[in-house]
Image 1 (spheres, helix red, strand yellow):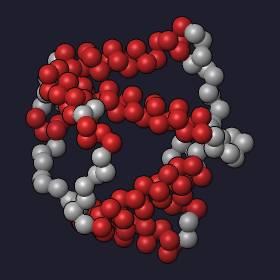
Image 2 (cartoon, helix red, strand yellow):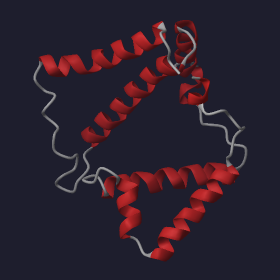
Image 3 (spheres, rainbow, N blue to C red):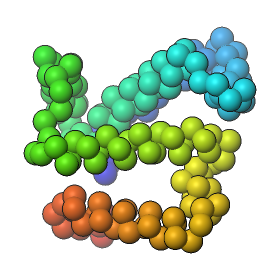
Length: 157
């Protein structure tokens, strides 16, 4: 949890830094329509989506870090020589599974871009067999990649 820490202040300041220029330039209303309303996906839209994702992800490093120094260390590691290296997977199955699930989720998100809950919309409109098959796949992934037990954060209050 962020608590009353400088990391939380930096997190908020970075979010403001990303958004305030759009307000000042009156461009925050420019993209109220869904991306790809015409059914096409342009390269520029993809770059904007990737850029937004990268900025927000970097901002979350500060939110989740114990200290500003820790956050800077993590960001330094992100932009080190390992940035462009191929991720290391324990086996080919893990790499294939992650790749297929990522592609699947991108397709679902794109096809349901006009709905606020893309995956939910996909499951509701699917046949019962497809829906329960998907549930079993999710359960299998949870069991396959489960981590260590952690206490629920709000139990600390």
